[in-house]
Length: 75
Image (cartoon, rainbow, N blue to C red; front, side):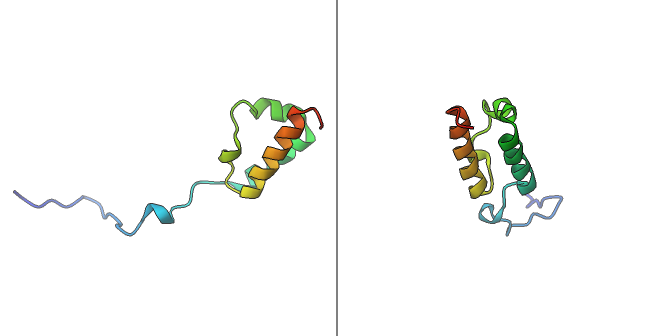
């Protein structure tokens, strides 16, 4: 049996532990700003957006706090 090689070069050094998840810090900031300015923006995304969807941990904490405040009717 013949030893086959892939038709393209496979980089064996590209380990999953070094991969960075796709993210957009500016989009996260814009979303948080929109939620703070207009609670209707929160109503549009509250059913599917979760704290774990944020790449930046600080943004996740802000979203969690603002979610609780808006849901409680405080802002």
